[in-house]
Amino acid sequence: MKNEYENLKEAIALLKKKKRIERNLLNEYIHDVQESLKPINLIKGLFNQSHNESLIDMLIGMGTGYLSKKVFVGGSHNIFKKGFGVLVQMGVEKFTSGHTDSIKDFGTKIFKTIFNKKPKEEIETSPGIA
View 1: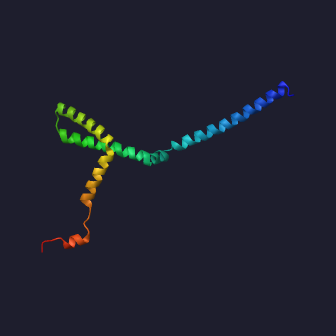
View 2: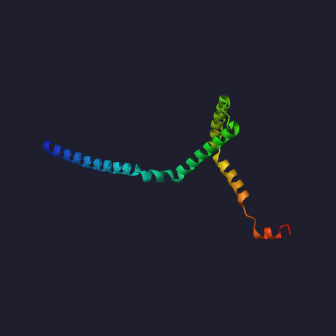
View 3: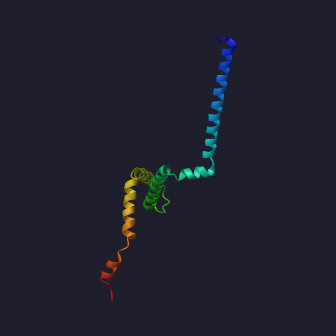
């Protein structure tokens, strides 16, 4: 049977081992945090797919809000028109940020309609001015 001294030695050894393991884990965690906070890694994180979608959604909302404010207010210096413009901008931003998928689809359809080239056969067979 072990005496008290040997039990204490074992407990101390186990605690030292636990301390060493936890210190290694902490050092790895600190290293990971340092790597993630490097400027290049922060920039890379901005362009991840999950962040990219939310960034695009935010930009669509802000852009449409700003354009709607400019349409409604224009270059007016009237304080009431400016206040109304801010309210319109905020409303449009909120609405468009919630419906970005349908806005993207609509924009894609318009883009394809405008920039879709006709096949050569249609161009040659279409009546033209001679």
